Image 1 (cartoon, rainbow over the protein chains, first blue to last red):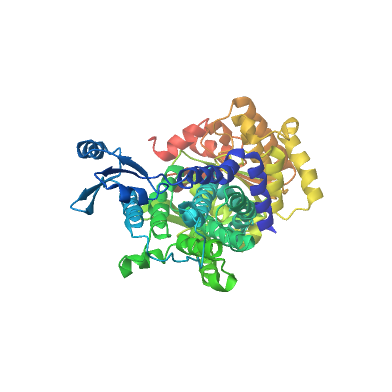
Image 2 (cartoon, each protein chain N blue to C red):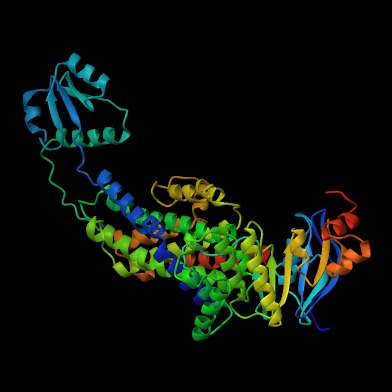
Amino acid sequence: MNTWSIMKRILKQFRRDKRSVALMIVAPVFVLTLMWLVLDSDDTQPEIALVDVPAPVQEKVDEDAADWVEMSQPEAEEALEEASIEAMVQWENGSPSLTLEGSNPTTAGQVKEVLSEALASGSQPDIEVDFWHGADDLGLFDYIGPVLIGFFVFFFVFIVGGVSFLRERTQGTLERLLATPIKRRELVYGYLGGFGLFTIIQSILIAAFSIYVLQMYMSGQFFYVIIVTFLLALTALSLGTLLSAFAKNEFQLIQFIPLVIVPQVFFSGLFPTEGMAVWLQAIGHVMPLTYGAEALRGIMLRGEGIASFQVELYVLLGFSVLFTTLNIFALKRHRSL
Amino acid sequence: METILQLKNISQQFGERKILNHIEFDINKGEIFGLLGPSGAGKTTLVKMMTGTLVPTAGEVFMNGEKLPSLQQMSQYGFMAQSDALYQELTASENLDFFGSLYKMSKTYRKQRIQEVMEMVDLSEHLHQTVETYSGGMKRRLSLAAALIHEPELIILDEPTVGIDPVLRQSIWEELKRLKDRGVTIVVTTHVMDEAEKCDRLALLREGEVIALDTPEQLKETVGVSSIEDVFLHYGGGVR
């Protein structure tokens, strides 16, 4: 009953507070678009200088794989110095030698790949390549996209949810509310309900935008993406409202971001964690975003069904229940009953 | 006389700091009971105990014979906090409707009461205005309206007139008197001496202790002075 009153009130406040609505929907859409523009642009071709390379070899190189420029050795060395080319191939005593510019590890790898393809003798049979998951046009944006969806939903719900609950305290309405017959848990559930309804809409919009407008690679069920995103949002909301109990004002709540949000980015799969020490990997297992990102990747890249990501669902649900319970308990500071 | 609130040997400590010291008094049904004291005397702490949001480290508070805190008793009183506890984005009507719904009032009853209390505090024309557009005084009045929405038999007001102009202050006191005439019990804290004179009974609070408690007239007569301020100076030893 009272839970419903709180929910209704929160939704009414949302209707008036266009800025928060924008922060939760427009901001993620905007940042995702930016990421898409940056990551999904066509791969730049490395520029490679050819120095004294014999003509028969030059004919064999794949024109499309790189910009091949013929240069003299001093020219090429100057270009390397200025980093205007990525590599120089020289021919000494009938065999190639490669000098990489080397300040960007990604292009260095790219150059090596291009060259080994170009210089391999054409006699090898072509290997037919099939993809078990994904496709050959799967780009970086497709790979980290699912993590980004999860992260932005998590981040913005955390902020807006946390600040709203905190404001309840700073503007004195919490004290006022607790002088009415409302139960502590009704208040917390009301928040989860009101924001929950809103985050469902948010999840649908952000996921639909990423998949249908930005053409993020998607091989699973759209509905599953919504479920995971929603649960992630619920976890962020319960965590944000819980942590707001330990902040005196909005500024102090913002201070939690580098402590709580940023580390999750490192462990959530944006960067490979397989090579890390076991204890370091264990840190990732206490972070909600790890599970959300893993489930989203499974659904979107590998087309997984509910059986494959149900563990992640339970863990996210567990986090939400834990944070909610702790929050109800934390409110005891304001009223013991 | 029937009592509505009983404070029994209340003490409160935050760590080593003593806020309240062995406070004991009853509040009778239908009276305007004033708590007068400088800031830091423990008024707000005492109010929190009367509303049941704070449990004293020692002693007990009873409302209608039931020990606090009690959810049952929480619907019996209306509370006006020191800060205007209102939702700025919402209209006056939405604020009142929200608080009303927490008391399980029916929709029609809520609607009727919103009209009534807005009339009482003279804000009827601003019913559908958002609170952000209200002036400070209007917000105080709306807070009072929110405390009255469920027709409570007891209202507890923490410094209701702080920071508002004399005209408005008078109108709030007139409203309190009208409520009293209807049989509502009123507990009000203040640090303004002349307001204290308008109370039926008055407890003077200083450094967590009740230094005197009586009707304003009786207090003045006992000490033999002409103003409450002098009474305070007499009992308080003239410091502060």
